[in-house]
Image (cartoon, rainbow, N blue to C red; front, side, top):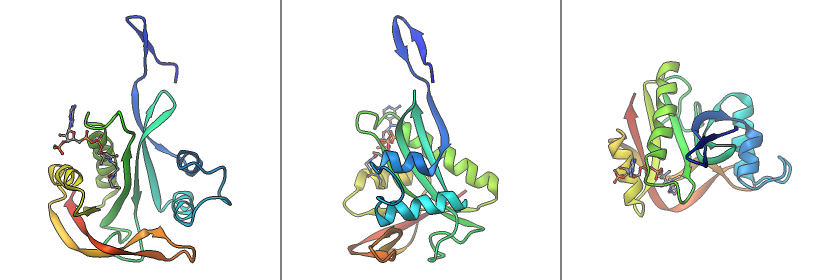
Length: 175
Ligand SMILES: CC(C)(COP(=O)(O)OP(=O)(O)OC[C@H]1O[C@@H](n2cnc3c(N)ncnc32)[C@H](O)[C@@H]1OP(=O)(O)O)[C@@H](O)C(=O)NCCC(=O)NCCS
């Protein structure tokens, strides 16, 4: 993206767009699919198959935000392919946080889900993440579905969801 000259400085417009599996691998520091971690392979395959979407904040070609939406997962409380979809791996690059970027990225992903006919979105949050919980509550994730020890998108070497000792919450929002 060329950028705009504003008062002698080059300003880049922040664009929210869907990105590719290759862009995800590069952002996560992998050269290619073969050298990627099990979790990265899972994300890549789901994006390639159309079961996941990678939403990004693109600032002049630099991806400063990421959020993934999975439509269908083995645990139907997270995503059931028709009414409920799961949001995860939500990150905004340090230096760009607390400026509304995460809120805007989530809003774009949620609006798209609603347009697709989904009625609910889910997201996970840990008890040691009060700031994330406040953000999720503010954008409408106000129903606790259950305590979780497995993230269906976080894979071990056998491509199975990894057990997490500390339980975290699965929250839901009506779209
Ligand atoms: C969670 C995360 C993605 C949120 O992204 P973000 O860009 O910081 O989110 P926002 O800026 O939209 O919202 C964060 C706070 O900034 C505030 N904010 C929103 N717009 C703002 C603006 N224009 N100016 C200043 N602050 C603003 C929000 O009110 C919010 O505060 P609140 O929760 O007290 O209401 C980001 O903090 C992050 O990457 N964290 C590390 C990774 C992580 O924990 N991810 C989640 C689990 S996977």
